[in-house]
Length: 442
Image (cartoon, rainbow, N blue to C red; front, side, top):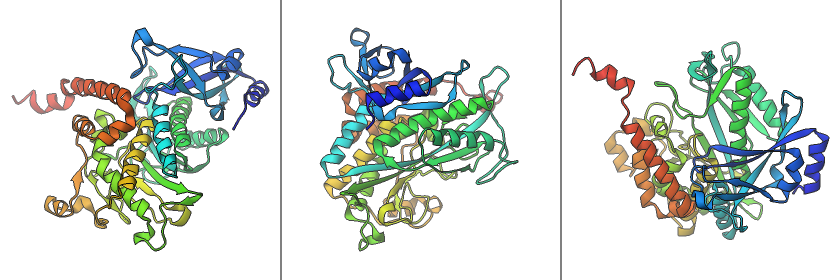
């Protein structure tokens, strides 16, 4: 636990001139209030206010005053400097009302509330994401294009992988900010990359994902590239996922491990898997929140489409990696990196916990390639499909009281309203495909 005095001293020692007080809106867009370092002590005393009326999913204009309360342990100095040679630091903040109570529309608070439930059951939740992204060239006017900077494939390296330098600098920057990066590599599609950092407690992991996205975009820009976490920016190639590894620990031991259980999995692990499977259709709108997300969740591009689990194969939605004992975990493969990390982890954990509390049992592990099964075979195994559009996902969300409870009524209402508007705008647009397909014929 860092102290106020330690933070002020580090800011002086490292010539910090500005501090970004960061938080996210309901859709996961990183926001910040930038203050000069002269106001840092005031910020650390929880005295910084901001107008929340224009933040997606926050409050009405007549009740817009919000209070930022920094989490001291998130103080980090960005390794790059401004043009004036000064340093910039950041603090991730919890959002409170002026009266002092936490703001229920703050996604970080939503996750913390679920983690209190995890704690009440005697567990600590850990999570480890695998964030994929594309690097595209910038146009002459500085706007993003969809032109890749390489022709690389899975695990390729330079000179084929021309994004290698940018990816290397991203890794170095993250390590300088305290991340433990475990691996980085080129992904399957041209211009697609992945950087994996060590698992941590769920709240720290959500903070790390938000930071990772910000750093990746900033470093890519320095290389004349645009980093995008859009799930499916290119037709005909793999999209970007955020496979998320989850585990529960109790008294320092992995609660998912049982050397005598099936596949060496404990009853807790199996019930957690069953909870994920039961609530996956309901939380997909949160873990895959864009219209574009559902162009990734289609057969043929490695992304899971069917609600299933396996101790072996990667076509299942929930996979159990081979590692056991301390490393026993489940991997949910459906989320994508456009999701709000706080809300995504909140609903995943809530779904799994519901399975644990109710003692649910998953169906048999599906060890054959689900994509190669016929519809009749999938019905025989009781395999359901994930929602095929954000419209369908929102309907499933509305039906799932457990996921709605995780979000809270405020976040649920604002999220659904924003996404229904997004769907309505999308479905009324005339696409290039429609013009090419129909204009000359009909």
